[in-house]
Length: 128
Image 1: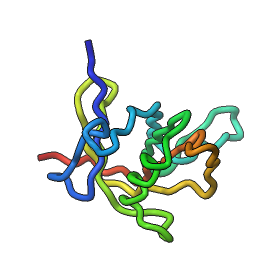
Image 2: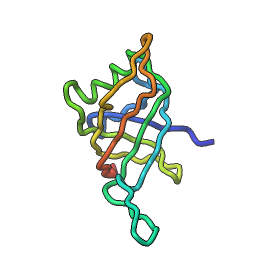
Image 3: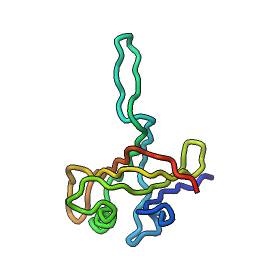
Image 4: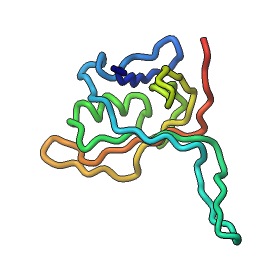
């Protein structure tokens, strides 16, 4: 059985599991893309351009969980350089130095933030 590993930190050595934070943050749905833009070609094919990116999304977070994530990208900033880690397609943990992008809109209702998504761009694999 593979255990999901999602970590975040401002330094590589400070990577912390989302489940270990206070308050704990549930593991997100994730989407890894090898490129940031897909272009249709005249011959009917397609080509990916740009650096890899990861999206982490949650159906909802509490306001406290959202506020905790915001500490990694302090307002009014819309992006910050941070470290994240998650399992790759082969099942081993991979850490990245990347740009965390804060969503331009948030759907806050009844002490929850609905359909919350963070996008991490310009991924650089970090090795110990």
